[in-house]
Amino acid sequence: MIHTHDTIHIIGGGLAGCEAAWQVARAGLKAVLYEMRPARSTEAHKTDQLAELVCSNSLKSEGENSAPWLLKEELRRLHSLLIGDIAPRVRVPAGHALTVDRELFAAEVTRMLEAEPLIEIRREEVTKLDPDKIWIIASGPLTSDALAEEIARITGSERLFFYDSISPIVDAESIDRTIAFAESRYGKSLDGTADYINCPFNKEEYEAFLDALLEARSVPAHIEQDNVRYFEACLPVEEIARRGRDTLRFGPMKPMGLTDPRTGRRPWAVVQLRAENARAGSYNLVGFQNHMRFPEQERVFRMIPGLQNAEFLRFGQVHRNTYINGPALLTGTLQLRANPNVFFAGQISGVEGYVESIATGFLAGRYAAALAQGRAITAPPRLTALGSLTAYVSGADPTHYQPANITFDLLPKLEQPPRDKKQRYAEVCRRALAALEEMRV
Ligand SMILES: Cc1cc2nc3c(=O)[nH]c(=O)nc-3n(C[C@H](O)[C@H](O)[C@H](O)COP(=O)(O)OP(=O)(O)OC[C@H]3O[C@@H](n4cnc5c(N)ncnc54)[C@H](O)[C@@H]3O)c2cc1C
Image (tube, rainbow, N blue to C red; front, side, top):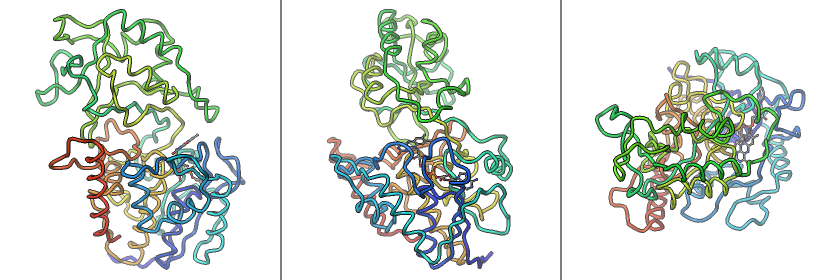
C-alpha cells in the first residue's frame, strides 16, 4: 500500500524523539512532537527542556575502534543532529569520552527544534493513538502510565516490562576454562550440548565472595522507586545475599545437578554463565543483575572462580524502565508487526543508553518519513553497529529479552579474526564503516 501522509506524530521530546523529529523534517515532512513536560513530569527529569540528560552527561567513549565510538561515528557520517552537530559544540573535556555540558546540550536541542518550521512542539501528554496517523513512540523509560496502558493495548501485551534488570556480560575468551566447566544441570540441555558454563566455588571461596558482595558499594538511587518495587525475579543479587548467608546457594548459585570435573564432586555453589543469544562470543552471569558501582562489580565478580581475568562487556544494572519486548513485537525497521504505522524508538524500544536511544530515534525518523512518502524502507546493513543494534532489538530471544547497549558482541564475527584484539576491533569497525556506505534509508 502506498502511503501519502505529510505528518509524523512523535511522542516524547527526549533523546530519541528529538532526533526522530529532526530527521523527519530533513526529509521535508512535518513532525508533531508531543512532550508532556512541564505540565506532567517524570521521576527523573528536572527541567522542561527537550533532550534532557537525566543522569550522567557522558555519551561514552570516543576511543577510536571501540563499539561506542563506532555507533557515534556511523551517526556522524549519516548527519545525526544530536551526535554529529550539537554534542561536539557543547563538549566538555573528559579524556576519551564524549562528555557534554548537559544544560547547553538540552538548550541547543530545544532551540534548534523550536526554530525548525517543519517541527511543531506540543506540550501535552498523549494517552491514545489515532490509528489513521503515523506514530513514533519515543516516550522513554519513564513513559506516563496512561500511555503505557495504551501501548500494552495496541501491542496486545499483558503488561510492559517495568524494571530493567540487566546481568553483567563477559567476553568468552576471558573465562578461565581450566576452572569453569560446561554442563547443564542434570545433563539436561535443549540440543544435547551443555547450555551453561559453570564457575564452581568451594565453601571458603563462597564465604569470601559473599562478604565482598555484602560490602560492595551501590550506585545511588536515581529515583525513589529504584529501591523499592522490584519484581521478585529481578531482585538485585546483593539484595538476595542480604536475606541470609545461604540464600544465594539455594537460589541463583545453587549447584544442584552439577559435578566439577576437577574434584568429581558437586561444588558448594556455582555461578552459571549462559551464552548470549544474538551476541557472538559472550556470556551472561545468570541472575546477577545488581545495583553495584561498575568498578565494584569488576572487583567482586573477578572473585568468581574462572572469572579472575574476566573482561566485562557490560555491567549489571537495575533501574526503572518501561520497554516493550522488541523481538516479539517489532520488525527490523522498528515497526510494530501488527501495525506498521507505529514505530518505536529510544529506551522503550528495548535499547539501553543515551546514544543507543538517539540511534533508534534517528532510524525511526528516517523510516517513518520513507513510509509516509511511499518510499521503500531498508534497514542498515547488518555489519554496521546500527544494523546490529536493530537486529538485536527485533531478533533476539524474546523469552529472555533484556535491553542492549552497543557492544562488539552484537556485531557479526569476522571470518578470519586477527588474534590481536585491537586489530580485531579495528577490522570490525573498518568493515562496518565500509558497509555503511551502502546504506540507503
Ligand atoms: C533514572 C535513569 C538514569 C539513566 N542514566 C543513564 C546514563 O547515565 N547514561 C545512559 O547512557 N543512559 C541512562 N539512562 C537510560 C537512557 O539512556 C535514558 O533514559 C535516555 O534519556 C532515554 O532516551 P529516550 O529518548 O528513550 O527517553 P527520554 O529521554 O526519557 O525521553 C522521553 C520523553 O517522553 C516524555 N513522555 C513520556 N510519556 C509521555 C506521554 N504520554 N506524552 C508525551 N510525552 C511523554 C518524557 O517526559 C520524556 O521527555 C537512564 C535512565 C533512567 C530512567
